[in-house]
Every structure is written in C-alpha cells, then in structure tokens.
Amino acid sequence: MFKEILGLIAVAMTFIAFYPYIRSILRGKTKPHVFSWVIWGLTTFVVFLGQLADGGGAGAWSIGVSGVITMFVAFLAYRNKADTHITKTDWLFFLSALASMPLWLLTSDPMLTVVLLTVIDSFGFAPTFRKSYHHPYDEPVDFYVWMTVRNIVAIAALLSYSVTTVIFPAVTGILGLLYVLMVVVRRKQVGHG
Image 1 (cartoon, rainbow, N blue to C red):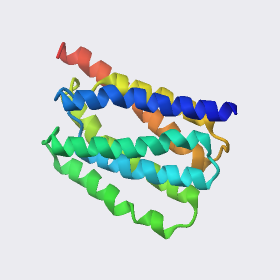
Image 2 (cartoon, rainbow, N blue to C red):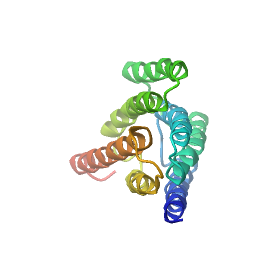
Image 3 (cartoon, rainbow, N blue to C red):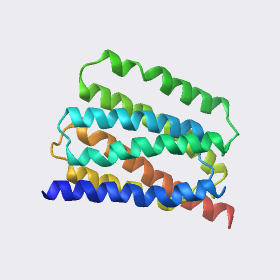
Image 4 (cartoon, helix red, strand yellow):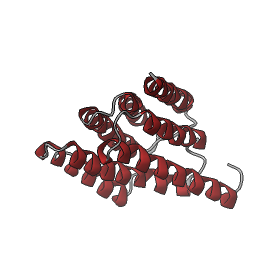
C-alpha cells in the first residue's frame, strides 16, 4: 500500500509540474524545443512499458503519465512554433534518436530496451540544453526541479528495483538537475531576462 501511495504522489507531482509548464506554453512565455519533446515523449512511454514488464508497478505510473503529457507538449511546441531555430546539431540528435528507436523492437529484453531508450532520451536533452544556454529565460526551471524530485519519489515507489526500472528515472533526474544548474548559472551570467 505504501508503494502505491508513493506512486500516486509521483503522478500528482507530474501533473503539478506540467500544469504551469503547459499554461506557460499556451501564453507564449515558454518556448520548448520540439525535437527534445518528441524524443522524450516516445522514449518515456516505451520505457514505461518496459518498467511494467519488469515489475516496476506503482513506480512506473508517473513515467507513463509523463509519456502521454510529453507528447502533448511536443504537439504544442510544434503547433506554436515555439522554437523555430533548428541547428544541424539538433537535426543530428533528433535523427539519431529516431533512427535508434526501431532497435528496441529487435530486442526482447526489457533491460536492454530501457537502457537504449534512456540513452536516446538523454540525447533528446541536447537541443534543449543548447537552446537554454543561449536563451536561459525560455524555460521555467521549476518544471525541471519538480520532475527531478518526482523521479526520486517514483524510484522510491518501485515494486522491483533493477537496472530496467531504476535507470531511466535516475538518469533523467540527474540530467534535470544538471539542466537547472546550467540555467541558473547562465541567468546570472546574462543578467535579468
């Protein structure tokens, strides 16, 4: 019962994190990078399926919810043309991630699939890191703080601890923390936005 409660808390934290983020997109204040969000949406939902297959239980719930909401954010980013500056490096990461997606179909091992998708998802962060380095006020850091804390709660809610169930929320949580630190430093360097 305790793990289920933690799982529900992680799901609630997902909604708490995404609600102001989506509102900010709709108001034109937040400009997400469409390539990052498409990659994250695809990988997150498939990781959720892998976590379920390996007995992740309640700890996987928030990952599944994130996958669905993340695809909605990708749609909003595309519809609003939030970040229309796409570099060759962005295309490289995007196409590499998409080309790697079919590889998970070739494996029947959830661990290999989740590890591969975690790597792909990490590459998906590159366009957002690049964009935010140059425009540190285009993304609200509180969203990434919420998601990092949510990942800690999701890990605590897991029914089964294995590479398959832990690696994705751990790595994405660490990347979120690194992202927040980079944005905070860049905001201090460039001044008030």
